[in-house]
Amino acid sequence: MNKFEKIQKFDRIDSGYPKNISSGFKNWPSGWSNGIDAALVQKKSITSAQKLYFFKGSQYIRYTPGKGVDSGYPKPIAGNWKKWPSDWSDGIDAAVLHPNGKYYFFKTIMDDSRVYPPRAMPRAKYIRYTPGRGVDSGYPKDWADYWEIVERKHYTLEDLAKGITSASEREGRIFLYNHRYYLAYDPGYGPAKTKLGDDRGYGHSIDGPQYDDGWNYEGDLGAFMENLDAEIQHPNGKVYSFKGSKYIRRTGRVF
Image (cartoon, rainbow, N blue to C red):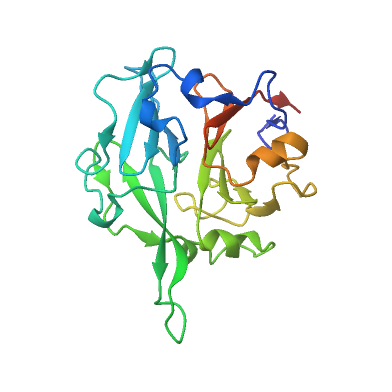
């Protein structure tokens, strides 16, 4: 049975949530109690436990599940993430561990190069990062340039091109969010195996009807997911979504 025949839906909030981030994550920095900008799960290693990374403004923290924030954090992003672009040192909007083992970081910038007469418009840029080596050559790039092979089935693609506010990966699929819309797709299907996108991408309204792959959010979950700040699938298998000072946990149901 492959992943298209058996999937997990994380469509229910676990009992007792939302909770305060500062009380749910050990040793949480006092200046970070009002929320985060992005979150990232470390690439799996055979020699050590997976860490979590949280980003806020120009800083980040490293978190060991079950123990708390590691000693010495927060630290500045610049100088600690190799080959980091100087104009990205003030922070990021989203981050995700791609199934190809690389990290993808997203940032919205104001760009006047794509419209005439020139006027500043928000554009989603991204960098690809190889753990242990740094930002790959040729980055940052414009996120929208890598969607030419996508069948434009939904307006969500246009919204995401203006800015990606959070991102996550679960069960090999990547979820990209922009306020109340998101895109879910399988990056390993088809010819574009190392690119962020292919013809299995579908756009959704967070609180809208179900689409081809059945992923949607309704009720209390839908309300929380709008304007989401960050999301990860924790090494424990559960999905954690962050918004402001709160977070929720979701346990998957197998279908």
